[in-house]
Image 1 (tube, rainbow, N blue to C red):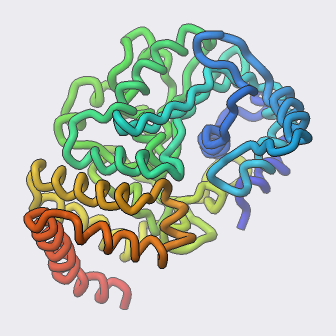
Image 2 (cartoon, rainbow, N blue to C red; image 1 turned 90 degrees about the vertical axis):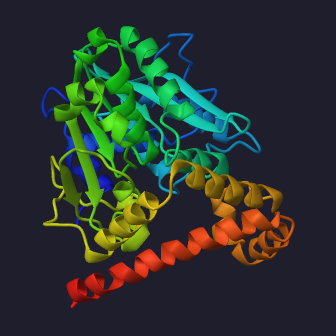
Length: 369
């Protein structure tokens, strides 16, 4: 089974004139958006470009200094950028317009970067949700808010950067980044919209019914390429109203969300026949559960859960994985300080989730058999 780095070994010596942009290039550049590039790639205001090869050289020099670390969410990211910098295909691609904005008060986590592929093509890459808990809170706000702050910033970013980059536009991202790509393209200026060739949505959460029925979405709907792995959970959350392409992954379960696990050919992602019964079960359960909750109840539940985690001094999702035992104790202690009416509401909401899952479990068992 071949994956992203195998593709770079096969095609890294071919520039885009010899081998046109394809869906594998999309996941590579969507993954690149996860790297923290402060001090290496200029901000949108400066309009300065730097090649990926030169960016790697700067990183190598910075790494020699004590205490410096090019932070990222995935352990493979350091190898990725070095491999890109050394390749003929990506080394000369120009980076510009890097932005990384986290605001706990506004509950926003937004990051993006532009890649000028050549004189005829550019890729606008939106970062997905990183380890900061405020980013995950913003994702869940999609359940009850028509627009979240990151979506607004995504539109502003695209309209600011489009005049600074040349040629046709590919716009994409992974996880929440894919959601932002679709939202930005649906709401950007018409002159920019005309330049957009494809919108890549890689295992991203969907949208509310109002957005999916909007004029802006329907104008760009046919440009969307929506990919999910076989056991997708994130990508099955809410609706997309776009044709879904299921991709094979070398991992299992939630780990299939990782783009490094997606299987590839020399110029495409490896398609699977359909998603797993487990993925369909989770999607059906979550949708039915949300349908039973009005926006007010959704907001109350998410706000209460978030406040409990904040009171328990949980700052990132990584903490939940590495220190779950200690955090559980802090969460239970925080829960005791929540007023009784909110505790009762949370208890009933969670019970309804399990009741919904129970009603769907029989169909899952039948499919698995």
